Image (cartoon, rainbow, N blue to C red; front, side, top):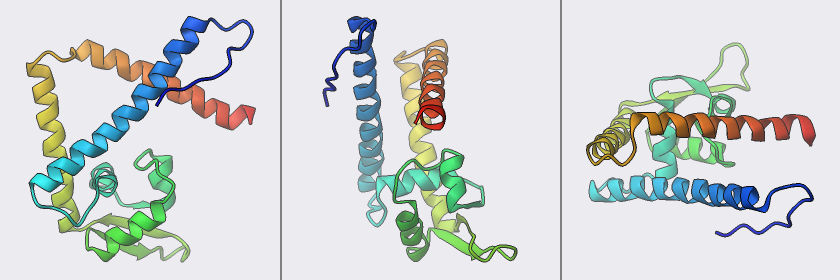
Length: 165
């Protein structure tokens, strides 16, 4: 995807172009991550779950959370979290239980079947990390720098949502 926006007065065009390149790269990387997970599951014959659901399971890990916490803790970024949770419960990847204190609140946690999916994704990511390090794709310092920069962008965007609009 190529972003095109009008240049604001006082904004350097080169900086804006780099920012737009970054936005496109972040979007492409997320889509590629989902494709990599999908391909791994197809290779293993695990076809009843999609990549978004597998990533959600991986991010939940050993935690027990509410649907609201999935977004606030950064485990899930999509807009259809309720649908995916319902499907994962129906397929036996997650347990759900109503809170004794607040009956409107439902807590979810992985079943043994869900933990098996989490382990597949964890092994995939470990293999990737090992391969990237072995091939010197990016140094540990480079990863740290990328993570620091992306966290700054995340903080900036969060501030835009909270304080400007």
